[in-house]
Structures are given as C-alpha cells and as structure tokens.
Amino acid sequence: MTASRAIGDGIRRVNRAPAVLFGVFVATLLLALPLGLTLGGMIREDLGASLMADSAASSINYDWWQEFRERARGIGTTFSPEIIGFAAVLSNLSAFVDNQRRAVVIAGAGTAYVLLWMFLAGGILDRYARGAPTRTRGFFAACGVFFFRFLRLGILAWIAYYVLFRWVHGWLFDDLLEWATKNMTVERSAFVFRVVLYLLFGVLLIAVNIVFDYAKVRAVVEDRRSMIGALLAGARFVGRHAGRATVLYLLDGVLFVLVVAIYGFVAPGAGAGGIWMWLTFLLGQLYLLARLWVKLLFYASETSLFQGELAHAEYVAAPEPVWPESPAAEAIQTS
Image (cartoon, rainbow, N blue to C red):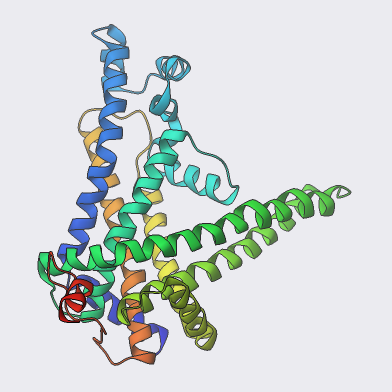
C-alpha cells in the first residue's frame, strides 16, 4: 500500500467515526476546564468591581496585566500575552524545540493529558482497525484492556524521549553548537548551523515517534501483551517499510502544518472585546478540533498502512471487547 492510499483510507476511517473525534474533543475540554475556571476566578478576584475591570472587559489593559502577573501564583503566572491567538502556538513550539521548562501546574496538566491519551488510544486504534462501530461498551472495554499495556509502553517512550531531550539535545545545542560557533564572526552562519541542528534533532525525534506509533498499532491489531515485543515489532516494521512509513508521517505532518498556518492567518490578536472576544474563542476551539482531527488521522493512516502490508484490511486479532469484561477476562474464564 502506498502512503497516499494509506492517508486517503485514514481520512475515510476518521470521518466514518465522528463520535471518536467528538469524544476526544469533549474530553480535552473537560481536562482544561478546571485550569480555566481557576484562572478565571483569580482574574475576577483581582479585578473586583473596579474601573479597571470595565477596561479589561472591553479591551486589553497591559498595565494591569503586568501587575497581575507579578502578584499571581501557580496557574496565574502563565497568564501572559503569549497565550493569545497564534502567539500561543509559537510559544509552545519554541518551548518544545529549545527544551524549555514549563510551570509545574502546566507540566501536571500535560501529564494528565498524556495519561488521557494513553487511555483513549486503545479504543481509538481498535475502532479504526476494525473499520466498524464498536459502540460505547466495546470502545471503553478496549480502552481498559490496552491502558496498562500502553502505560508500560509509555515508560519505554519516556526513557527514549529523556535520552533525546536530556542528553542528545544538550550535546547538540550546548556542546556542539557552542564549539562550532565560538569563532564565527557572521551571525547568519551561526543561525544556519543552528537550523541544521534543529533539523537533525527533528529527524531523530520523528524516527522515535514513528517507531512508538507502530508499536501501538501492532499492540492493538495483533493483541500483543508484551510492550517490549510490540516495540521491537514496530521497529522491524518501520525498518522494512521505512520509505512508506516516513512519507506517510510527513504527509500527515504537512496537514498539521497546514492547519497551524491557517490558524495563524485567521487568528485575531489582542485588544478585541465584545463579540470579537467570543469569535476569538470560537476560532480557538475550531483550531483545537482540527488539530485533534489530524492527530486521529495519524492513528488511522498508520493503522491502514500496517494492515495493508502485514494484515488484511479490517483485521484485528483480538475479539471485539465487551464492557465490563475484557478479552483477557474471557480467556481466564474459559481456561
């Protein structure tokens, strides 16, 4: 199967399961809601019934904003101009590529988000692999079956990413970059060398992402219990189909970049109030929905490519899970 056919089939699988996209979207909003309510309460308490509150409601008051950040603690310290519109995307990208530390509360929310995806990934991949509705009971049964398996796989992923960001990133951007540019007199040359290192680190990161993605796919499609075995099997699949797996990942990545670029073009800036404030909020939610659609497309297209190469279409080794009894429980009862 070619990468283009896999991505086309992946789009069909995602679009045929709108409940999955809607459920993930709602779960993401519910996860972010406590942080938003907490921050909103802090802002409301700080403003009170003052004239400054009226000013902040109709436009951006930068003087109050700076004073609020100086007084704030916890989640309040993240309330900065970079959270508005496309600036938030650029801020997150900059923090990611430069390995910057985030506030503890943001790191905690990020950890909770990762755990949420670990839980949902099993049900999502099982639904896309079967190519048929599994209903609510079957979906959450698959989530429960694979959650602890993906938790073990997540530990292996954490080790791999720790090595990348702690050692490889440090060696590239602290040691090698400093050594190579210390005698450079042209700033442009130093910038080009930094970009080359970003590309090299990106290649390594993409390679690790692809291997772990196919480890999840093989774990679900083949009902694997050993996550070390699934990781090795994922690596073998990527090694044997490196060209198509890489092209497919890049095609999915292009769609992600396109979504980000469109949002960057239409996202309004700061200073708007009234209906424009609600329009900004609506655009932000549409952007979130589009990003989640692309993330699900990664899962669906990679599942399609694997099934097209090593398994027949709509093949899943495990029986359809039924809540609350998992296939593992059924096997114990019949043995």
